[in-house]
Amino acid sequence: MTQVFNNPLLIVEDSDEDFVVLERLMQQMSVQNPIYRCLDGDEALDFIFGEGDSSSLSLPQRPAVILLDLNLPGTDGREVLEQIKQHESSTDIPVVIFTTSNNPQDVEFCYLKGANGYLIKPVSYPKLVETIQAFVDYWLRSNVIPQEGLRFKSV
Image (cartoon, rainbow, N blue to C red; front, side, top):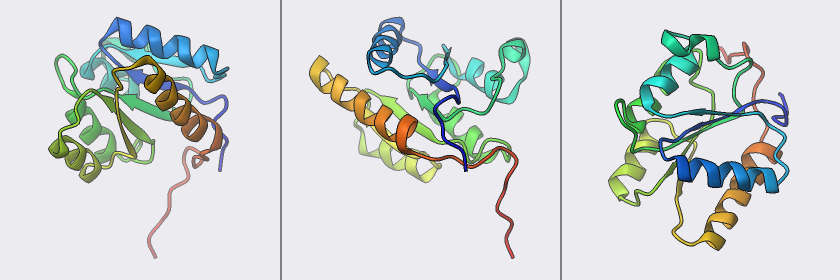
């Protein structure tokens, strides 16, 4: 098991404004993890799997967690989640949905497809700070992830 203090955080977010706010909040919360960003679903999949034009930007090590917006241009977050959780090399990477959608069907779909968490983007700044602090405290400071390459084998 590995602590995640230095493992990268991958944020898949098309909104520049949302990303800047997230990045600033994480700096204020003294997040030490390198932060990588993908603007859309296709870029995220290329980035995660080391393919396409983004392959030169692929992650130096497996992410501690992927923070994934659902409403992305091109391949949307639902499809990105499905592909991450279907691919043997990435199925155990935690994926937390971070979206404006509070639709119960989206929540159910994401958990059925393997999401590890679902956070609704708050409208108020104080609530956003509270939500991001909870995310940082759990996913980047407390949670322990398996070492890359270790897989449970069924008996």
